[in-house]
Image 1 (tube, helix red, strand yellow):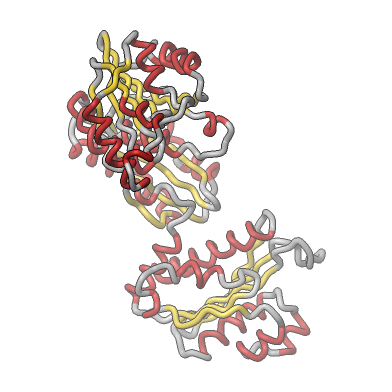
Image 2 (image 1 turned 90 degrees about the horizontal axis):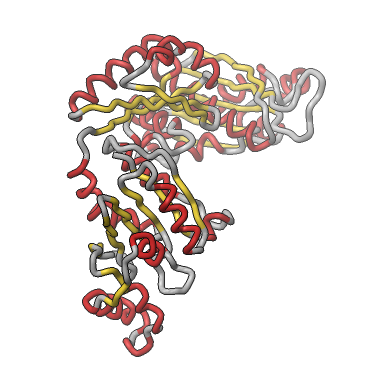
Length: 420
């Protein structure tokens, strides 16, 4: 079955509002094994909306719209659907009463409800009205000659609830196959390099399929299968995931469902969980990252059992007095150096008697670089139960990008350390 999505609203065309509705609907529809070939966005113009319906039904069985169900004259979605099917809008007394009662709760008096709200109760007699339990604007299913237009409200909270409660069961009843996906998150390898490692799998894929997505300093792979049953999908997906793990498992830090797919990174959650489960204690001394490593970990409930302290020792004086970095080390090698990073890690670990000490010191920019120490240079110090080492990296980007990338690198180093 083919479904088209039309988002209605001039504010979407102007970029004033992010169109998250289309993303939600595409994902939900794909999970049912149905096709979404085109998404369209149209302003508040009834003739252009009807043109969109004409275009969509060249290949679609169902068109789902979001937005344009409000009480004002620029809310034209129902009018457009009715015009396309040559149906007449009439007042539905039952839903007008419901709308009045809902509006009165906000105004305190039915007599104060604006007269134009009656537009939200206008539907063709041939349509099936969809109740809105989270707002005033009902949705509807328009149908004629085997074609359906399903109109949903624009506010995401209202739209998602209406779709799940009323539209999803309808689509499930008409779906013959399902689509399932699993997601793999990578750190430490770029999209191009990862593609080259997996090129044989990518070139030979049929069902299931893989798609690579670049995140901020990471790569996400979606593995998708289309089958008649959920169990068949799982078998196909798990088989391909195992092959990916064999080829580049060293870079994989998380495998899961779509709940891990939206964010730029899940690394902080993974590392925090590993720390708590390990029973090890950690402290962090940050210079160029300015507390980002510690703050990314404290979002995880229960991290206080592992994270003892995070301190920002930005100045040389702080490095000396808080961490015990030798002044001679700073004078000879500088604050941004392998030697200073290691002494910082030792100092933060031994001052609290923890198992692991992590430090960062670098040049985030836009100033402070030299020929030997360019912008983006970061040294990481690691103290691990008596063993001490340093890692040197040079990151690209502006000041914030360097700091964020250094933070993720440090988190991944903690992950690798705990994994061992």
